[in-house]
Each structure stands twice: as C-alpha cells, then as structure tokens.
Image 1 (cartoon, rainbow, N blue to C red):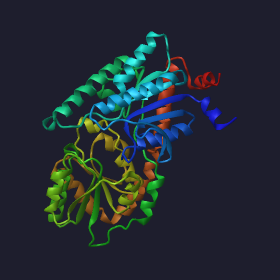
Image 2: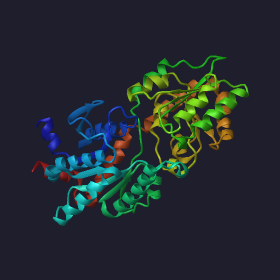
Image 3: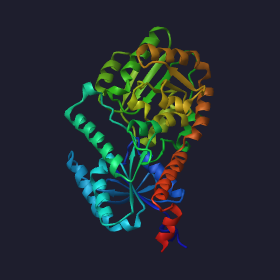
Image 4: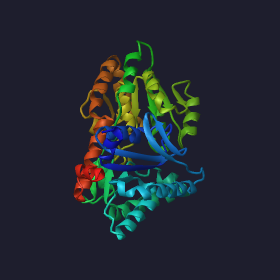
Amino acid sequence: MSRNDERANEPHVVWVRATTLHDKLDAATWLATTHELRDLGWRVTLVAAGEGGRHEINGVEVLCIPQPDVYLVRRLAFLWKVFRHLTPQLSDVDVILFHEMSAPLFLPLRWWRRLRGERFPLWAMDTRTVDMTPLDKERLKDKVRRYFHHFVNQWANRAADGRLAITQRMAEVLHIPTAKLWGVWPSGVDPAPFAPAQAIRKWPAPGEPIQLIYLGCMHYERNLMTLSRAVVQANAEGMNFELILIGDGTERADLEKFAAGTGGQVRVLDSVPHAQVPEVLARAHIGTLPFPDEEKFRVSSPIKLFEYMAAGLPILATRMVCHTDVIGSGEYGLWAEESDVAGLLGALRLAWEARGRLAEMGAQAAEAVHGWTWRASAEKLRAALEKGMAGAGRPAAAAGEEAAR
C-alpha cells in the first residue's frame, strides 16, 4: 500500500487559519502541531492565507489561498475562496477545525449542510486567545473586534458541533458548555532547535551584566515599561542588568524613547524571523514574562515561556497561574509577587542573588520543558478530536475504514 493510500484511510481534519503562517512567531502552533498530528495518524489539510497553491513552510505542507491586502475585504475574500475550495471535498472530511475569524462562513455552512441531512463533517471552533487591548486604549477597530469575538463565542457555544480551548481556564471564561467542550490543548515547543543555545551560551562572569530578554509583542498590556523601570531601579541599587526587548507593538515607540535615556540598560530591537529566535536566546541569561495578573493572561499558555525553557534560560515571571501551572516549584523560576515596579524589582533582586547558579537553573528549565512539547500538545488535540467524533457516533478508526470504502 502506498503512503497516499495509507493517508486516505486516516481520519481527516481540515484546519483553517485565516492569516499567513510565513514568518509568524506563533506559527508553530499550527505548523508543529500539524506535523505531529500527521505523525499520530491523522490526515491534516492545513489551510492558511498566502500565495496560492501547496507550499512547504518550515517543512510542513500548507494549502495557501490568496487574499487581498485590504482591511476586512481580505478576510471576506479569503473565506469565500476557502468555501469554494472546500465544498466539493466535504464528503471526505471528518472535522473542520477553525478559529473565530472563520466562524461567519463555517457556522452558516454547518447549518446549511445539516438542513440537507449531512451529519459530517463536524465543525469545531478552537480558541487560543482573548482580546487584550485595554479598554482605555481601545480604538474603534479594537472595540469592533472585541464585540465580534464576544458574539462569535456565544454563537459557537450554540451552533458549533464542538469547542476546543488553549486551557481549561479559557474554557471557563468563555462559558463553553461541558457538552460542547471536546478538550483543551496548550502551547508547546520543539526543544531540538533551541538545544544548541544551551551549549554556546556564555554565562556572565563577575562584573559582567546579566542579560535579560523579552521577545514578543510590545503592546501596552504586556507591562514592558514597568519591567524597564524596574531594571533601571535595580541598577541604581548596585545590581547590573541589561534588558533587551525584541518585537513590535503599540508601546514600542514609548519604549524606544525610554530606552534612549538609559545608557544601554534597556535596548529595543526589531523583530526577528522565528528561525533566528534560538540564536537570539543564546545571547541571553534570563527570559522575562512580566505580564500583569489579569484574566486575559491567566487563561493563556504562552509559547515564549516554553521557548525560553527549551533554550536553557531561567525564567523571571509574575506569579500567576499561566506561569505557575508550568513552572510549579521548579527552582528555575524567579517570581515577581506583583506586576508593579516593586514586585518586578523583588524578582530582579532574587536573580541577582542567584547569579552564580544561573547555568544550573537554566539546565533545570531545559529538562522540565520536555513535558511541554508540541508532541504532547498534539496528543491532547488528537484526543479532543477523537472525543468529538466518538460523541457523534463516528470513532476515528471507523472514519478511516469508511474512507477506505
């Protein structure tokens, strides 16, 4: 039997992401998980925006569908093209996995097919994040997006066949009915590309600064200005830290202005392609996650936490559940009890006291991350998909047998 014939006998999920996956820091959520799902015995058609046709992105085949670069119109055009592409193939699909931006197409399409007596495919909405823009900084576009996400979530709770979420807390915040919740699956990491960072890192010698790093979105809600002020205060007390901020976002201009007056204590650098992230982390000594203890962060599963760990970095983070659920009592965690300057300064003092143990702490982090791989996440996703199919009277094994016929 050829590999194509084997694939035809596997349960088939079409996974739609209504944005591009090229050079996105969070692209591993879809690419790495797709790779692992395929290895676990599922046929996955991953659909994303991009230059038309089938392309390999980081070694994973993706069906790319073009969309115009016009706000709002691009989403509608993309969804219409997805609709035209998928409709003739739906009899060969067991599950359509989608996110909020695709709901305006897929939930009506599910309703239409049910009216025609079609029980499959099943339509499941996966939620990975909630709106994070502070209410006092919302623009009209932000407010429209927030109302849209609220409406779509309520609609999916009623009209989707199933729901998935990034964490159990996310499912609770969204009030996903127990009967609709197929499962939760967190973020993860592929440790292999990050492992070389552990070997090439040079830990600070006496008198050298400890390099702190933050890599990701630079939006106001990420609390980066507070961390920057805490670093300057720590150095004023006789400690020696340098903070590198890498990324882009709404607060970047303010951070650049602040950094310009710190004499190099804080530096703001441009975003880097995801393939270069391990190299960047190899030059750091501590990974930072200064997020405030707010609901929108509590429900998350931050990819950067796992990437810092995989690169062998101790973690300086605020003590909240999305961090403590992973690190637990691990000695590689340096906790800020609050997200204000005083709280982060307290964590910096802990880091300064531990400066002779940073290499040991980093090794512990790298070992602990093996419980949080994309393989482990894909296994949870597979279990959720199989639960949904079994609940609809179509176990995954039976789906393969039906496809073979």
